[in-house]
Image (cartoon, rainbow, N blue to C red; front, top):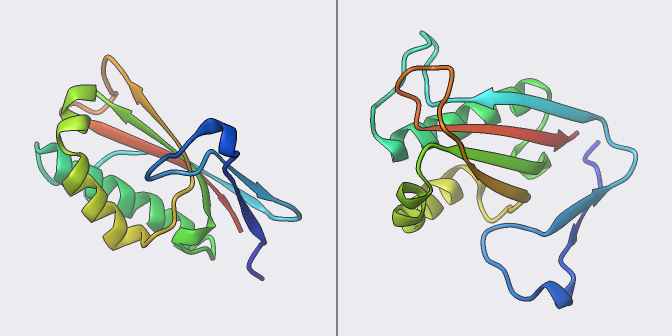
Length: 133
């Protein structure tokens, strides 16, 4: 059963692009997805490059969601941790393209956080998520 998820975007917060201000759901089971970096099934980073790591990290998040019986549109929250905010901003257009390839036009509530480092050497990005199943 697909949960009813309502986008919450109050007009007083102004226009926004690429995310929802909030998402509301009732009577849904919640899935909390651990932080995922851009590594493969051998726990090796797919690349030293930011975009490739982001794409793989998002694929890893979605693999967990699918294993639990969900789809991309079940994501209600996505937190993006990056080493370099400027690198993220410089890559917004290609990030948007690769995001839409995996997520379509579904935009959960999102937060971007710049961090000092990650546990995994060489990681440039980590994603964690919540899904309503």
